Image (cartoon, rainbow, N blue to C red; front, side, top):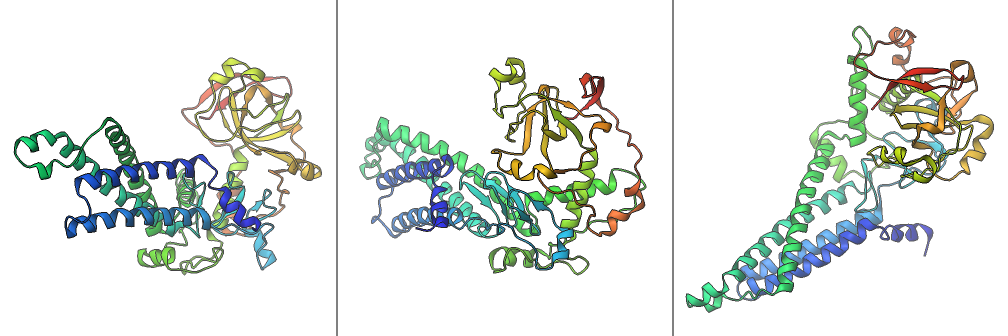
Length: 443
């Protein structure tokens, strides 16, 4: 058994697939059992078709679920470089995969790989939804929703007929009094009906999101990039940044064909005539550049364990103020440098910065390099102390950015301070130079 197959089979050993398969087994048994009393196969042509449809839904759901899980989203090869070496100027570098991110790919911290056309990480299939398995995931949702509707109708009709059993007998219609309710199957029906209703609502929501992404040829991550691109051009009056055009929306027919029929490689994508294959990646690079300009440097002064509830190391009050997100918590050592982008009163969110002389040592450290850590473990560095040449996340600091026209816009070269209104200020925030300064609280 090769390593790739072992990795695929290992995806089943997760609470998502295990719970989904277990619930599917329980609900299917309940539906088949109640259907055998309510509308037993063989009574009529309709009963045969109904029974056949039950198993068609079951096998269709399981087939596309397993295919979504086993095929996976498709990953960018480790240490990947574009065929033209100068194209690296337009791409982001991934230190975890030790290679460049292909267009439309993003690094998934749960899969720990760069995913081709990544949409989101789905815990139910324990992998990402992306280029290779998006069509199977949509089929899985369709079968799952259809099976939920049919199963819900069968259970409701069977329970109603079972409750009316004595009434049917009094009316002399014993052939209608076929459903015998017991405490066991009644509890199974109530439980299964609850699972069906929750599954149906979740399937409708996910199916809506997936069809919206397919019709626009725009993943959830790309939608967020587009929103930031629009904000970057409209937030400040007077800027002269060229309007951003999403390059992959070719019209709904072409988008649907690309999602369900295309057999590309997941790296090269057709684009609009006025765009090029790196239009989106150049916009991402510019957004990253703007984000770096807004970050603050912090130095770790005492270890952070990386625990979600660090009650023993940081105390009860810090543990009660944990951020309400599923972002990772990172472990830090004294003198670690952090690029902080989000600030709360007791927690900071940032990315561990790695000096050029310390890249190999930092790669050997386990755990995430980006996430939340207690604010009491670090102090902000003053500008005079932040003169070392660092690269965020292990990426060597690049001396030149992509030769994009937007990066040379006059408004982008201005270094004046921006005015921010409605800010919440924190007092007595310690800095490395020993002074206490007021800091902006970013929720």
